[in-house]
Length: 110
Image (tube, rainbow, N blue to C red; front, side, top):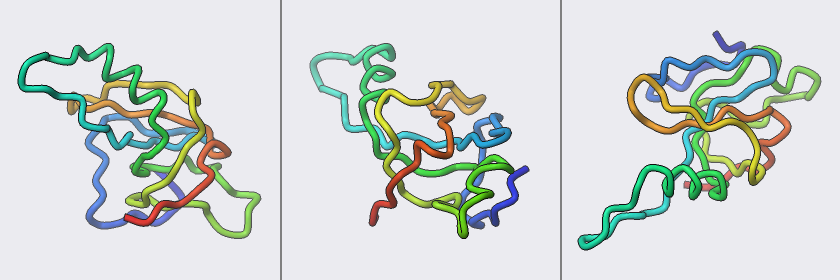
């Protein structure tokens, strides 16, 4: 679906495919588990809205078209703007964020 090349080891299992300038990212969650207290999913969702580290899963066909080269490819670790986008649960049960292409602003070394 994306006009950018896919990284062979990055497979989109979410069932979500970004359109236009959207970018599908998977937030890199900070560890929110405890041996004593179970952290509810609502707390995990809120933590992901603040967390800005993510992995690019799929890029919409219009993302970064006006730029000389794409900002990121599937599989890249990036920073995204806080509070941007929409959290969704994929068909695989994992949390994802759909963000605007302009909200991806920095690559991150692994």
